[in-house]
Length: 263
Image (cartoon, rainbow, N blue to C red; front, side, top):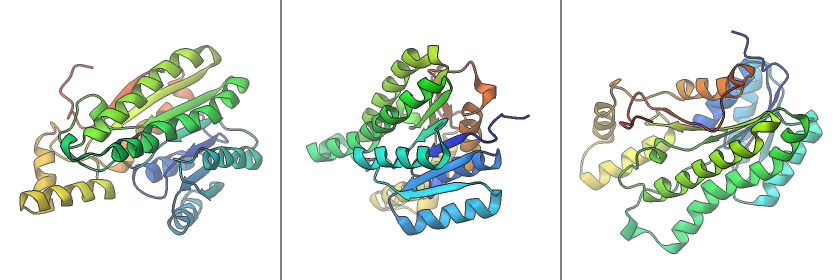
């Protein structure tokens, strides 16, 4: 199937590793031109070079702290200067720390809002007017299945990412008439460094090995295993494409059936 992504310009945030990197690779393989960012220059530039070598894609790489509006604005402007426009924007950021409510501080909540909600808002403010003017665009947010089924110990993520889902639904209604589609993709337990960190923390707290935590998670998933970043990226690439032309305002879980709710 031709996804119609050849020559499209895609921004992918936090794309030096994990889910963001898998999405960047998937878009590049379909012929998109990429603008990728992350906080650490060395890992970002290494990832960008590997994507170029593997796919032949044009890749702009810039270190960006997505919690700083001026840096996001500068990055979007760099992308437009390099490629002329922006067609696709995939927002992404690391998750807040694992804590119970009683362990959180006001500063934790402010940091979580900045990391996940405000960073999404910053990109939306910069790319949506561009997409609206050209009457074609895709804004895709990466959150978590916690927006559908809260996860114990992740109260910061449960709350803040749910706010992102509300933003997505509101924006999808406002920009649909301009052929700008806004969707949210919700990864479940996926084999990333972030998941390894969470498994290690829980294992230390419970006096078990990290592999036992991962096995416990897998046992809660109808498919009986954890997902891969590539499996997650496949859906994001589809939603970014011409083939997803009548899909907007949805939050789709990529979780092997982990979420038990009907919707």
